[in-house]
Length: 394
Ligand SMILES: Cc1ncc(COP(=O)(O)O)c(C=O)c1O
Image (tube, rainbow, N blue to C red; front, side, top):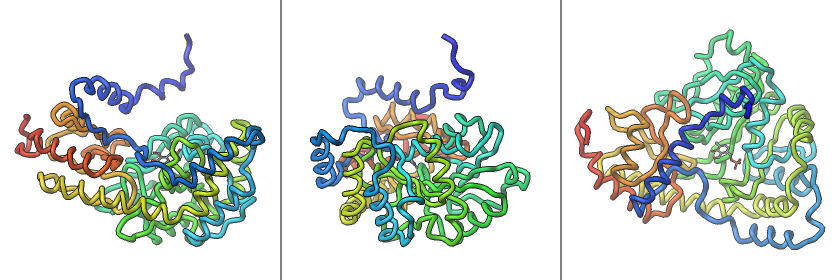
């Protein structure tokens, strides 16, 4: 079978390799603890599931929807106004996507030509690179470094790169790095995007997962943002609806018009009951989000404190679903991950899978209940890895 040349760029990823290894090890460790998955382990709010099942029983609900319903657009506008203080026009400044992944991987096709540069965070969520590959564009990595609070340094981007760039992805709170953006940084992004005529795509998938009362700001809340970009979000993480595919893009009217045109060639909209369920979540879900934050914050605290007690001191994330943990000196991320699986039966993701600047870190997802996280700490302790001296192999 002849494959398209572009498939060379989609060779088996480190995620597939690890998944195969995990399966193999499952037979050896009967209680392998998997902290590598980025999918919520908790259910959606009951009133959301109830709406979904009620409308799924309606024989009229099975036609093509083609676009987002007015009700869905109004619910997104309501959510943005009440949650982020951003006013959006429901008809022209909002459009559906089948989860943010749909938007992230397809946006470059509509706005980048082969060879155009797209600026991406490094480390960053892998979908950005997938979309860039599909459009035959070229990524330019913006390193996220601890010394800069994991914000990209726009002044480091060479002028000739910025001139060729057509799009920039940003992601705060991020995956894998759970950093928060400041308003000053977002203002800088707007100025940079205006100067070089770059479309900004702000991935806000973790907007509702924040801790210690420190709420992330929407990119669209800073002056001028709507002139240069869009924000993309979904109900996957905020309302535990990851498999119930629905999300939205909002902001710049022209970007939305063009992308809507492109998407009318790709799909025929989202199943009506899913849109109905999303309306319930967006308009009635605020207290559910508050409860979710409390659950994740408690998990975060017990896990981070547990790690500290065995000598692994890692930063306490301010937001998101992940711990971005610096690994002990003397290991590569990949070797460390294999060692944790082999010796402790705990699975995490190596940082370099998200880009070259991820080397030296692992990503740990807080997608298990507290007792399981504490059990993972215990297993890590028993593995002896954290009592080794620098450079010493167990
Ligand atoms: C940063 C980020 N953006 C987008 C997504 C895609 O999520 P969905 O397509 O379910 O909205 C994920 C999923 O893990 C993510 O971590």
